[in-house]
Image (cartoon, rainbow over the protein chains, first blue to last red):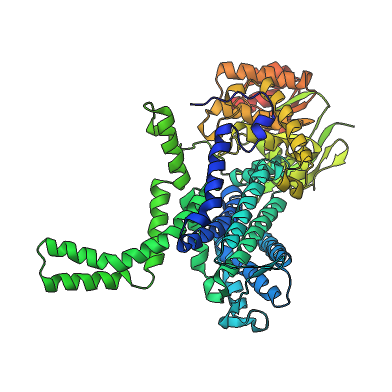
Length: 383
Length: 252
């Protein structure tokens, strides 16, 4: 184990507490930079989606993980970012301008959503954000002069400094990676300054936050605006990656996927947003693989255990029918969330911390270290 | 003029008069204790001062300024800090970041500066941390500074709440039962700290307390309440021997 001797207030502030962090994150960044020269184009495309989803995850983590305000409306923020980009593109607005404009506009919309949300908590806030998402979805479908309705909009490739940035090329990947890294650094900066601490204070006890001089309403609106703004920026990248956007891409299911990103990854930490994004992007090909191969595998197993040819065929058909049933993906998402909430509430990042501690303390690791403590002293009166 | 003054303060929940036309004044630099049986309205007075409840009627003055209609977060900015009877700490944060939240009323940096973590933000952060370390030293919290609140025992949390209030460098501090749940030794420490707060830091203390030993040791004056009304006011021994107070406690 490493023991840090702090000799300066700076030691508590710096982003990398010791040289080990610099080495490991440096190696990670180097690996990500050379990735386009090593990985196949399919994997690169997946990596771009990881970057985009992780950016949204960081945005949602600020709101839900750090400020404690749940939202099931982030697909709508993504849509607003995407549509702003597609709309402004028609007037030959340069990429940097509409990229920032999309973030700004989404941030303003986020703040506007934040105002009514000030009076709502918990499940009611979730309902309000879902309603907001449905309103936005409906506007996208109906406001045909701007959004082209259900026919959707084409998104042209990015033109930057006279060069064309193809959505499949390495430059676009670097762009997404840069946006993700800058978002994470900005968020970390926020978390080590008064605003970030005010967010966490609001999450843990609004009464105490107020009595410490924190304007709870103002900071909630700020949190909504920042979270939405980041999601809007990700929306622009999302639009370019898809090259075509239509209202049915920004449904409730997408918002739930974002919740999965932060919940599975590990709420309360930015590592969680990235790990959750990797998990979510990986799960889709995995489900496709199951759908294509499971029927054959299961009937094969049945055959080896003595099922006749006809019987095995029936089993294969039944499994195939089950695997291609509508809504199976949503059901699997639901099961994943339930399993994680029950058995690993700290998410993948929590699991990583446990594994790390296990090796650091070996052979003295105690399982009880991470056992959730029941809190007996909690005032309900001043809520 | 008094430093802090409550005039005819009332808080009614329907027919229940939790606080009923209570008037009192706190002089600068004194330690004033409020005592009374359970349900006498002691904590309600604190909740009125820190604006968790709006008063039904009456007015509150601090440094000759009417603060009755100020929003809750402004109370702390004026220099009134408080602790809670049942502890309201930020559970999933470290002791250090809990105490840094106490510095919030002194934060001057803008959002965009914080996003970039400009040198000015770094400088103010260091200044905040220097101040927090002084409070940590004052209350002997060094062993806990990097621990999460959720893993700490009750007695330590009680001290951390006091520390968080002190980090805001208040002029007036409201302590809601500072000794509840503490053992004899910890209560002793608490009484020393309360007196030091007055003599070394120059903070005026308004405190709700049940432990009469602690009240007698630290208080300059005592107010006794029952059923939301003031029974007696004066020096600790005067109040304790006041016939109405004896009747309220013993039912004689």
